[in-house]
Length: 258
Length: 319
Ligand SMILES: Nc1ncnc2c1ncn2[C@@H]1O[C@H](COP(=O)(O)OP(=O)(O)OP(=O)(O)O)[C@@H](O)[C@H]1O
Ligand SMILES: [Mg+2]
Image (cartoon, rainbow over all chains, first blue to last red; front, side, top):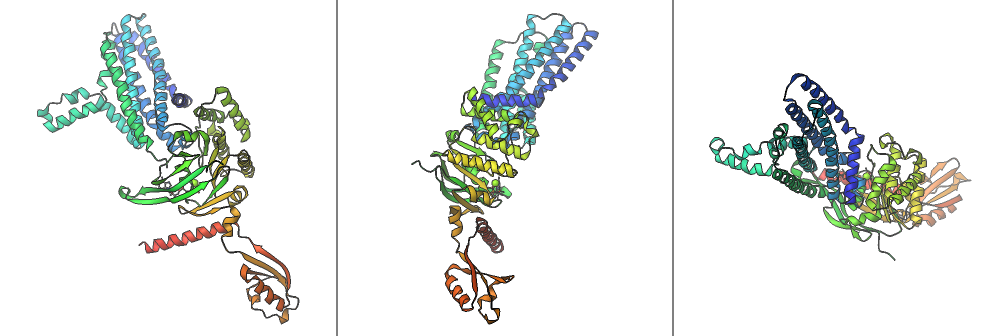
């Protein structure tokens, strides 16, 4: 446990020292610009614009970080040969992998919390007040974080078995496909042929279902997000990460370091 | 009496390559040897001989095709083994966004030391490898030799019983090499076992209780540095002068080399007395008789040459 924490903390420290968190400046500028603009032109849709834009930006920036840093978590240590000294310590390979995962998810959480603060400030600026229904935005942000955790796990899995470039492509592919899981399931067999429809349906259960994590629409309109969905998504993300990380650990444990 | 610190049993490593990985390159072939507790063992071999391959197999960084090894009585697959082992990788590189002190502190966390103890050890180690003043500089600004020192520090940080160093002297200036030698001797005096690989032969000759010479993935010889070169037949060197040159018609003279008014003759040990008799008959004045000691270097060159010849032969017949 302390080993995983040590690796995780170092991963966070690396992100901080490599100035990854500077992306927050970009987000802050975006939110400020949007808030000022919206404040000037509209009547009544300020909240919808700010929340939609803010959540999309949080999700997009988070995704970029999750994929690009996630793919490099292990491969960078192998390329730079820092892993030799580290794995000659009494550190199990799965502990290393899990530490890397925890470290990046923690980094993403810190980043997301900071961006959320910016989003709420912008909201406060245009609405002059916050209501109870704005809690839905918090839940939407939580879902984004769950989604990012799954992406990090996938990035680790891919980067344990293939090159960085391919890993990035696979991550992007999984993300896009995972956002259309519902469509794949309901694909009509008279259009695609029965075999293709069956394959699509099976594939849709292997892919991470990112659709369930997208509640931007609900949050923007201040609608209530069902408690059952929160529980379901939390459980789903935890299970999905566990399975993917177990696969990554199995591959990584057999790996020869050249 | 404790058992051997390292037991290697028929260790073989093949790397698949080529189309569909059908071909195999054998980097290490059936290595069997032991390193005794408290010994300084030198692992010698030319570039590409399989030294680093062996060491990485021992550290469980790569996995053997066949065979196995035990370190301090524990199988290499047992993570707990690392608790009492220090390892310096070849051309070490560490997190360049950390300082030397931070890297050492990070590594120390895996040995479950108390924070205060950790801090003291880190300072101690920095001092030992001569980096006290550079301890707070990020490693991206370090020179090669300084990184090598950080590598050495992290290898001995936790006071291990067995220290495995892959080319500890590479990249160091004469002062640094001397310091590493002193550290190795200090470890030996503290009863630790040390295995290090090198192709700097004088270092091995000076430091090692025993050396193993590996060429082309195969162990070619193992023993004390003096003993291992003694396997080759000894030659004797005779220095003599010829005051009355004209009368001498010894056939030996043709084989001798002339240096001013002196001659130097090298003969196999068993022919020494016969040669001396002949020289006496020729009224030569014997100046000195000495044993020609082949150095580790000569032995090494001899093995490498033999391996090259063999490899060439294989290449020709292999077609
Ligand atoms: N990942 C790999 N894939 C294929 N061949 C490899 C791999 N790693 C090492 N080899 C081969 O194994 C052989 C032994 O390499 P090794 O690194 O053990 O040599 P070494 O004795 O440490 O040499 P040096 O003195 O140059 O460090 C070399 O011929 C090398 O080409
Ligand atoms: Mg080597």
